[in-house]
Amino acid sequence: MICIQDVVVEYGQPGKLPKRILNGVNLDIHPGEFISIVGQTGCGKSTLLRLVLAEEMPTRGQVLVEGSPRKQPDRRCGYVPQKYSLFPDRTVLENITFGLEVTEIGIFGGFSPARRVRRQEFRLEALGYLRRMGLRESDAVKYPHQLSGGMQQRVAIAQALIMRPKILLMDEAFSALDPGTRAGMQRLIKDLWRETGTTILFVTHNPREAVTLATRVIALGRTGADEDGANIVLNLAVPDSANDATIAGLIQRVEQTTFPGGGAESDEQTGAPEA
Amino acid sequence: MSILQIHAQPSRTTVWILSWFLFATGIVSYFWVSRGRHLENPDDRVMPTLRQMGQAFTDATLKPAEDDEVAANPDRQSLAAKIHSSMLWKDTMATGGRFLISMALLFPAVLLGLHMGMFPYVGSFFLRFVLFFDKIVALSLLPILFIAFGIDELAKVMLIVVGVAPTIILDAFNLTRGVPKEQIVKGFTLGAGDFSITYRIVFKQIWPRVLNSIRLNLKSVMLFLFAGEMIASQDGLAYRIALLRRHMGMDTIIPYVLWVALLLFLVDFGMRTLNRKLHPWFQEA
Image (tube, rainbow over all chains, first blue to last red; front, side, top):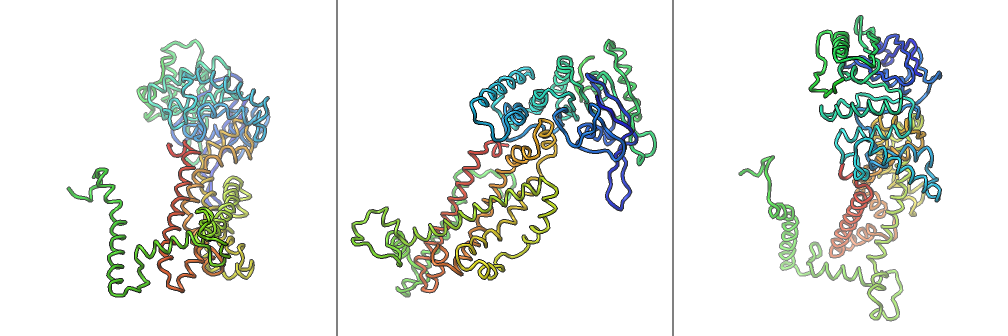
């Protein structure tokens, strides 16, 4: 589904030595996988996500989605960023139906009777998603600034899922939430993944969150000098039938690989659910 | 209790008194000095009395403009007809018309700023040029505009556009660039194309801020409009003020200045109210 081939990413200004972020990353992601990308701050997790999203192009190598490279983000990938995930000028319902409106109705086709019927269908579908996300129908008319952080992220997930993307990319989507809300969101996203079978790439800097959510954990880190850039230092499958002890062991392994000197987020901070 | 405390909490009455104090002081001072001058010289024209200003304003509002033919029975005209043929009405309409045309011409400036911010090629093409124009003192272009466009309406409107448009373009450009990248990426992932993102996501988000920017530039718009009217015009509020200056007509000039301030306040208030009604999310966020 996603094929990352020998990808190098460098940033730099003309005349200055470029700064290498990713150094020869190779990764294959299969349909229906739930991949957590974990690593320390600044190790290139979000860069890797942006490459898959096609928001950014690699300096060398290539990223193929369904066998072809892309020039800009498209609706095959849903996206839930940490911040600014909703359009502030639209209500919750308008945010969720935005994608359907823009792809099916367009700018100038909004007034014919057939369109009105279709718009009503969008509305009903969006309300269904709203309920599925644990929000009330009365929230549909609220603007994003009237919602809590957790509610905003729920709406953002609904907004992405209603487009039925093949891949859902989540960039530290829960990191700004309080532990309780975060645990609820983690349960929700896991349930949604089981229901929809969407391939999910979930960026986090928390090993416990990474292991408890994913079917595979990819840890990024630097093995050499800082200027060499990061690469995959751990590619760990999480067995579906793993018991608590196995999970604990995997978390420890990810922590030791990713944060060898300590400094991983504690469970209290993350609100990570029981496996 | 010190009045210079950051955490001070003045009562509503105190706030009301403080906010009107300077107005009251200014008005009382004016009439006190005016009274003294009129006691010394009953024909003083520099500081007219309230009665003189009231009379002059009534004349400007209810008497026909000087260039109009006097109606057959002016006393039997309705109040609306009197106002409609008055000097103040005609001047206000003339200035208002130019003002509205100028405001309408600022809309393409907003669109240009939006496209410059969204599309790198458009931005590269226009940005330096607009930055350069922004640094030109618009009033210094007045002679060139009069030579190029004549002394008709076009020159005055162009003066406003040249004076204010670069600021509005750059404001719209910066506001566009300020829209979080996540929103644009999100738009693409939801199936929107370049123009859908430009108009349905970015434009909608910057529009209330642009309206605010235009509102804050209203005074500049009026400044350029008045400069044009004072130098080359046959009607308009500024033309009248300049004309009356020659005759020391302070009894009309002062009410005219206050009338202009009132009009500008009403436009500002109207734009603020409209912005609040049209974009509740913006005011509350």
